[in-house]
Image 1 (spheres, helix red, strand yellow):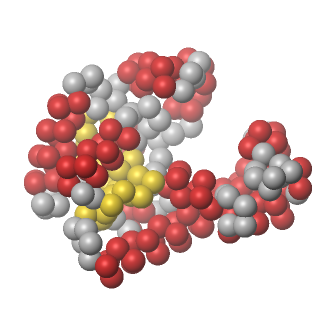
Image 2 (cartoon, rainbow, N blue to C red):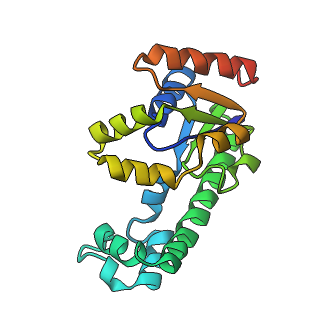
Length: 201
C-alpha cells in the first residue's frame, strides 16, 4: 500500500484532488480536519482534554463544544492556542496512523491519501511515501474563498500569511499540481501523470 500526502494553502482546491483520487483510483482518503472534528465530539479524546484545559464555558448544554466560546478563549491568548494545538494535532496524527495500519491489515486499497494543511509542519513526511503540493494562484484562492466560505479579502489574506509560502511548499514537496484553472480536466491530467511518473500506479 502506498501513502500519498496532499497539502497546500487554503483555497487551493485540495478537495477537488481528493475527490478525483477517491473516485478514479478508489483511494482511501483521510482528512485531518475531519478527524479533528470527530475527536472533538462529546466523549472523544480531544473533547475531554479541551474541557479540562479550558473549562465548562466551552461546552453547550447538550455537551457539544461551543466553538465561538472556544475561539474567544484561545485566539486572544497565544499560550492557550498553543495548548489547543497540543491537544488536537498529536491526537489526530495518532488516529490517522491507526487508520493506516488498519488499511494495511485489510489490504483493501493500494493507495491511501492523507490531506492536511499542516502535513509538513506535523511531520507527515515521515509517514507518507511522498507529499504533493496543490498550488493555485493567490487571486484565484481569494475568489474561491469569497464564493465558497464568504471570506472577506482581509480574512483570506490573513490566513494565507500564516501558512507556508509557495516557495516553502515547492521546496518540501515532491510534486506540484497547478489547480488554478477552472477546467478540472487539466488538474486531473496532472494527477494521472504524477501517479504514473512517481510510481503510485
